[in-house]
Image 1 (cartoon, rainbow, N blue to C red):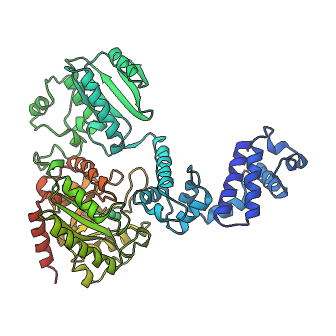
Image 2 (cartoon, helix red, strand yellow):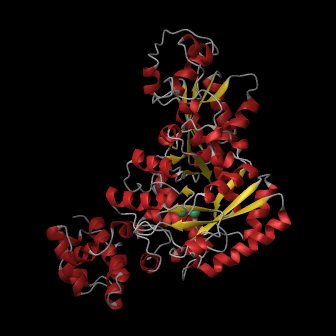
Image 3 (tube, rainbow, N blue to C red):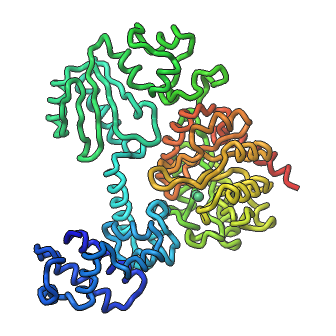
Length: 551
Ligand SMILES: [Zn+2]
Ligand SMILES: [Zn+2]
């Protein structure tokens, strides 16, 4: 094994030994030895014991370890520690700004065992509360994790949206009169994608010049330009002529399966996309929906898809009562200011101790505060809710007396995510059958690019929601977008309402509903099946009728 391999093992050993609270003298010996050995260029394996021992900080134990690693490629003491450390914790030790001491707190106190959960916890401000952390460290960790995601070449749609639209607006201003459009996976609003794609009828050399004038690094490859926005976001610009623009836009927008479904031929001649669809006997298909699934089938809805401006309420939000950054009043004022008719507050429930879950007394206090604010803010209305943990046996987190004082309940799984499908079904169905459950929160617990959800059979769970009149959340956070858009048609066909919820942990979080709406449209969600597109009065009536069924 070469020197850098050996150093890697010694360093990891020092970190793990510290993480597991081993003798601090030993920890320091290994980390300072690794530090000083870095300067030695000779292969360690070929150095004599005396030479190795002459390096500052290197003692007998380290020399023995170097011999062991050179001979076997392994270090037994390290393997022992690895056996008792979750893989996610080992990964965490590689994050800039996170030493073993901080990782130990994350692991032991916050009970977080993977990078995905860590990022999620940062988003919910859970780290701020822990010893040795602050808003600054938290932000650093988020940047560092996102950087490692970026190096895999995949992006959450929302992360690319801002740079994409600001480039697009400026580009259009410069080339007024030209045909310019987003295309590819970006135009399809894919939840995860590799690049921003734009198509135009502008000469590629003019586009290059434009990029140069804006200090945007760009390379031309025939008629395609690969550029990088703000030093990190990948952008592809395809240049074509005015005559072929519409055909190429159509061709580059739809997924391969969509084009196959249409039996599309390059020789097909058409002026506009809608002409093309019409010639094949279809209506114009929303770009978001051109994925080659069931968008061409007769049963697929053709119009009245939900639009962002149609959302009238904001459900599922956190305040400083649990792990939110803004107070109840601030959250309400901002929702009112943004012209929403109503707000649903759903802080974490008592079992979620790590997230400042509300004890019954806190919840009753919050209910009183909401009553007072409702008097002050009328006709704007705050609905009293809770995001109740679905406990390990599937029950909700409070007794009937408490639950019956609330207007609605979002039931979500936050702990014990490593379960098999049977266990997940047992917990979910029991929660769905609980008459107090109004909305099932983030259905699978997935974090896009970070963590798979627990396994479920979507049909089975959606059927249970249909039987019990429970709505399903489309959690609008760009990492979640859970329920996945591909299941919206099924839910709609079963008569299950979808609620586009921001799960906001600060007031700016409401804006995520914009991305949630895009995912909802991609799945063909209709306005009439969107719970928070109901007016305040309709929503109130909906809850009243539901509560009337509770015995
Ligand atoms: Zn949640
Ligand atoms: Zn939540």
